[in-house]
Image (cartoon, rainbow, N blue to C red; front, side):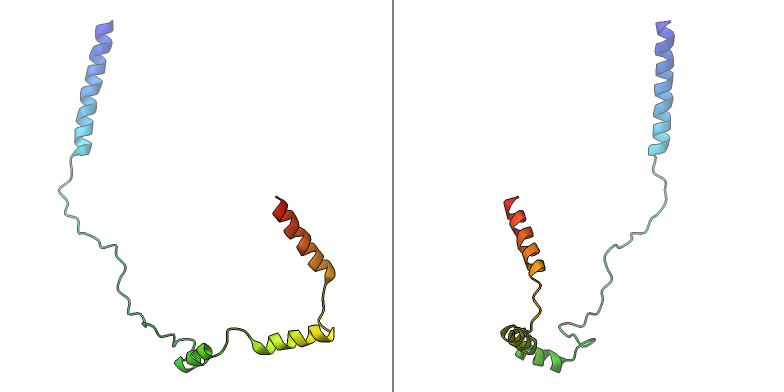
Length: 103
């Protein structure tokens, strides 16, 4: 009985090897190599002409990054007492920051 099981196992393993051999054979098919690199694109090097002109870029580089007009308007409103201040919103933000620091 043990011999029968061994024989069956040997038969299965040898037939399995044949199946593996059949699968492992490489077909004789010629495959062309495919390039995965990105195609070269002619990029407009250093120029942002699509949205902003060069002259405007030069003007912007001379101007300060802060809107002086808006800043002075807000400063004047605070000095006059006409700038709207929401004390509840400020208190909530301070309390949230305090709770965050405690955690």
